[in-house]
Image (cartoon, rainbow, N blue to C red):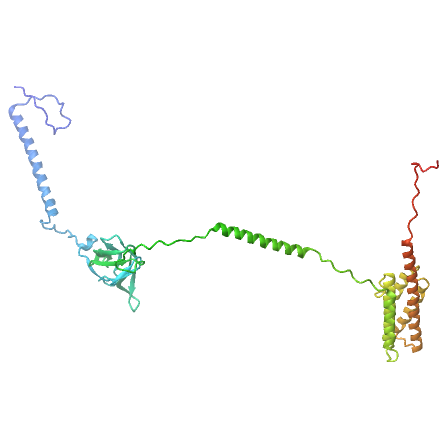
Length: 388
C-alpha cells in the first residue's frame, strides 16, 4: 500500500518534499512522536510562567539570594510630611505680598524646595527664603511670599513642597488647606454703591482762540517795543561839538604868568623854576608846529625847527638857546644867579609874544586869501584855442 505523508506546518522548508512510501506502523510512530513533542513544549511554557505571575501578584515567596526593593531604593518615599503654616489673618490688599511661614519637619541637612500652591492658580508664589537660627544654622522654616492680583476670597488645598532626604530619596510635604481674603485698594467700603446722579450744571469752557489771538498781539507789541529800543540804542548820539582849541600862545602866556606868581626863585626852588619854564616852552612849540616837542630832546627839537623854518623864522634859534640854558640847570646841576633866571624868563616871554604875532599875521593872510574869489575863466568858442 502506498501512503503519501504531507509535512506539517512546523516543518519549515519541507512543504514541497517528495512523497515517501511508509507502512502504517511507521506512520503512527511518527504521529505519536510529534504529539509528544508538542505536549512537552506546552508543559515547559506553563511551568516557566508560574514564577513570573507570582512575582507580579506578590504572593510568591522571594527567591533566595535576591534583594527585596524598598522605598529608599525606589527613589521616592510614600508617606508625605505634614507641613504647618502660619498665615496672616484679616483682609489683604490686591497685590500686597502675603508672607506665610511654612515649617517642614525635616532633619538637619535635609532640604525642601519647589513650594507650590495647590488647586488655586490665582495665588502666586513670589519668593521662598529659608530662615536661619540664632547660631547661623539653617532652620526647617521657610518664608513663602504669596500674592493675589484680584479681589475676592481664595481657598487653596494647601502648600506643597519636595523634600530631599539624607539618603538621597525624595518625598513630599503638604499643609492643611488655607484661604485668603483679598480686597481692592481703591475701594474703602465693604459694599460700595453707586452715587445718585447729580443735577446737570452749566459748564463754561474757555475759548482758546481768543487766548491765542491776545497772546499773538501781546507778542507783537513786545517785539515792537524791543525793536524800537534796539534801534534807539544803535543810533549814534549826536554829541555837541567840542569847544574850539585855544591858541597855543594864550595857554603859554597864562602858564608863564602862573610861574611868575609862584615866585619859586625867592623860595629857592631854582631847579623847579627852570623845569617848568622848559615845559612851557616845549608845549608851546609843540602845539604851534604840531611836533612832539615835550617828549623830544633839544637836538631833535632843533631838527624839527629847521624843517619848519618858515613858521618860527629867526626865533627858532632863540628857542634852541633857551632850551639849552634850561638843560644846564636840569641835567648839569648848574645854579645860575636869580638875575640870569629872570632874564631867561623874559626871553621866553618875548619869544612867545613874537611867535603869537607872527601866527596871527599868517592866519590873517590865509583868511584874506580865502575871501578873494577866483578869476573867471574866459569863454572861448574856438575848440582849438586859436584867435579868430
